[in-house]
Image (cartoon, rainbow, N blue to C red; front, side, top):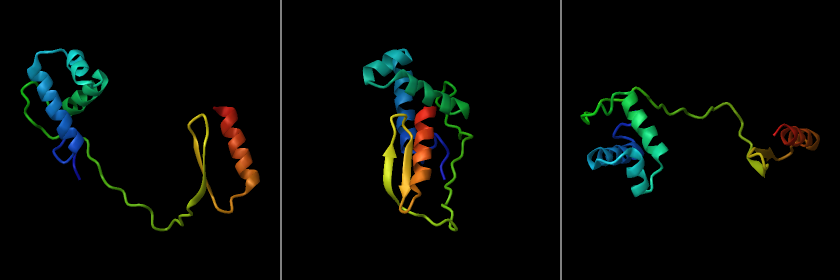
Length: 117
């Protein structure tokens, strides 16, 4: 498993190179982002990620970041029933309805989601 910002993450390697180019450019983060079409918030976020673990301390020295990702296997004892219907509400909620679902319960769930959102 890779650490966030390590060379095992394609996106992190890409953003590390982008930030290195920014440091050499002499531009502000905002100017650099605007020229490249990258939101300054994205650049700032990645800069914080790398600094959080000492990744960039001004000299470009690479240090491992403290964030670790671990793959979590799916549970083996849970019966998976495929959804036969997916309902997307205006609120952004997604309700996946399995075959044989109780219509009364589904109606109450949908009403509750529509009134609370």
